[in-house]
Image 1 (tube, one colour):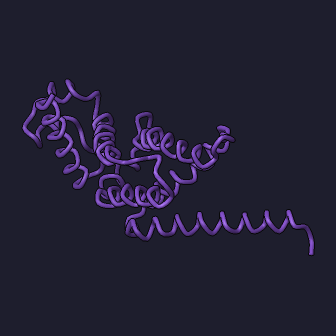
Image 2 (cartoon, rainbow, N blue to C red; image 1 turned 90 degrees about the horizontal axis):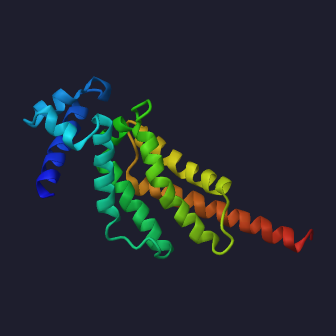
Length: 191
């Protein structure tokens, strides 16, 4: 297993280096293998194609982030985790910016959404308590968060993660407070 991970990480490093130099569409498996002195057979033993390698990079690095997290923690801890996640994406901004631009059937954007949506959905379900949200609600709120993250990552000069998370948190809290205020006033009736 260790040898397998060494090979995978070498291929991942090679792809990341190539993506820093050129467009993903221009990169082929032969270049990835040549960069790390491996043969194509080794590549295809571990990955279906270069898209699979991009997804593996995200999966393994993101799982490493999640490994020691308590996802059922409190409010402050959730925002701290979001900031930690955004810091990871910011540190790897050039890679993810290019990865999110991959179009087509095996796009990273689709994989990213499939991976992140359940995490967001779980958090939303926790907030709703016993009155579980329906699919429309989960889709709406998940899409809003994922779209905001993608837009942030796709910008060439993306703002620092602390600033991005602060904007998300401020917006969320202000909206929640304003809605609560309106609901309270509506319950009290006209004065």
